[in-house]
Amino acid sequence: METKKSEVRLMKGNEALAEAAIRAGLDAYFGYPITPQSEILEYFTEQIPKRRGVVLQAESEVASINMVYGAAGAGARVMTSSSSPGMSLMQEGISYIAAAELPCLLVNVVRGGPGLGTIQPSQGDYFQATKGGGHGDYRLIVLAPSSVQEMCDFVFDAFKLAEKYRNPAMILSDGALGQMMEKVEFPEEGSLPHIVPDWATTGKKGRERNFITSLHMEPEKMEEINLHLQKKYKTIEENEVRYETLDVEDAEIVLVAFGLPARICQKAVELAREKGIKAGLVRPITLFPFPKKILSDLSKKIDHFLVIELNAGQMVEDVMLAANGNCPVHFKGRMGGMIIQPEDVLEEIEKIIQQPILQE
Amino acid sequence: MSQEILLEDMQCVYQKPATLTDDYMHYCPGCGHAVAHKILMEVVQEMGIQEDIVGVAPVGCSVFAYNYMNIDMQEAAHGRASAAATGIKRVLPEKYVFAYQGDGDLAAIGTAETIHTINRGENILIVFINNGIYGMTGGQMAPTSLLGQKTSTSPYGRDVEHNGYPLKITDLIAHLPGAYYVTRQAVHTPNTVRKFKKAIKNAFEFQKLKKGTCFIEVVSNCPSGWKMTPKETLAYIEEKMLPEYPLGDLKVPTQNNN
Image 1 (cartoon, chains in turn brown, blue):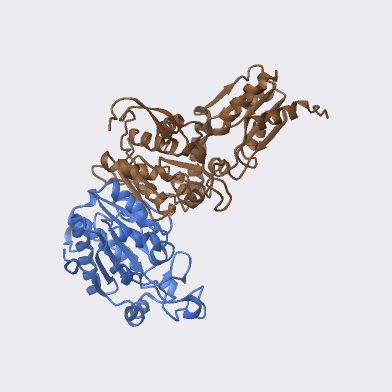
Image 2 (cartoon, rainbow over the protein chains, first blue to last red; image 1 turned 30 degrees about the vertical axis):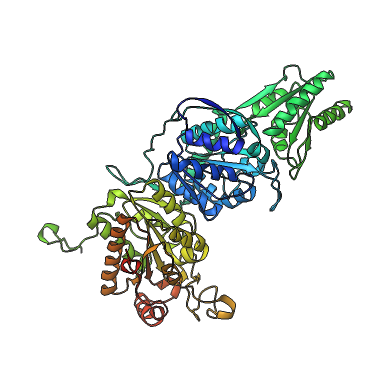
């Protein structure tokens, strides 16, 4: 297989993500099959033995995430992937990884829930991904791709950010992005160098011993660790926010959507503009850190936000916090694996702008 | 009045290994963990592998093992020490890796990880301290608690109909093809300590061969949890624990045709 030069291929999102990880210098993958992301594990089990690194199908998601903990603690560039129910099983381990400040990549190809739910795409895990998910005060760096190309690109970004901040980074995808095929251009293999960090447990040759832990029995020490983590999250919020905007300059109503629905909303903005409605779109790329400032700035200029999600309304709460009452924040979503259509979004836009603005 | 003792006038005949830190151990007086830690670290020193080893501490009384063992270590989530050790060993295959776990960690919450780690034949050592009780959380019933044993969650004694049987997980493990060396040892007498040390040495020698998992159960005690004096626990091990958990090798490499 030709891997030395940049190349364009037609691929499934899940496979593109896996290929990108190998090119990003992945040392180890630990995972467990679950639809709709099993292609990631399958791709690795086929490719890694022929190329480089470790791939292991674990006995459960619980084991997978703790293998990630061990390997990340040993200084490896490591990842796991799963889909919603499996991600729930991993939450304890993710909390430990965040607390021990181990860099790694987590991929959630979200399916409809709650419970065993469905295998169709959903964004029902936004809260879990962005608000902690497991126990205690911690945050993941969360990137939300909206194309197969970004399923590839964000692997590199996620490893960079995870290693820069010693923090787990998550790619929050969905079942549609995982399964659909698009053109994808890959970066060169070896373009993301990795140095084994000096804190890793690799055997204490020529140095003091290292240990990886999340246990601090003295409350003063535990608070100190927490303050350190919070300071780190603050730094991430100050420096790593990413988003895209479309037609917001003169917009009266601004759509806010992440992932696949952002592409649906692009079309909806186009349809609205054809009808003379000044619509725009903000697409958060990082869900944590959340692009609060652009939304806050816009909230002072526009008449309405309309948040579109494949869930019952999760990110909408963050948009409301950013808008802070400056303008109404509306929500339209579909759940359980159903995908909203551009026409549905347009209908909602028209409904909103036809409503008289209530004055207090 | 303090008495001055000049060290230079004395001959050193025995000392704590340099592979143990100077931290005071938090273990209760008479606890087997302290002995097991020391012997494990003595072997690491004698084999000269201090710079080439990574250990994993569990959740349980030995959660702070990394405070005492002067080697690179990780503290794993409850029950997941063997999964974390798998992660370490897979990315550092030339290093010695061990997981040190108690009975609740290894044989209750972590049973799946234990079985599958060994079934894959991960080239690690698992040291399993079996004292038949949850020490850290205050003396609750463990999967290995004896029938009739009174604990804070079996106040009338462990009852088969209600709680099932003591789990002889080491016997189960010995049947797994991935297990290379399985033995049950103890640390409550000078003789058992010597045998335990030999078993640890064997296990690290075997780890070099990359032929599967080495598993050493240590039938141990818990003076606080058992509500006994340290001396009483030694008799309890002999009279109650060892009949249920007899000492000896359950699987040795010659039986593997290796």
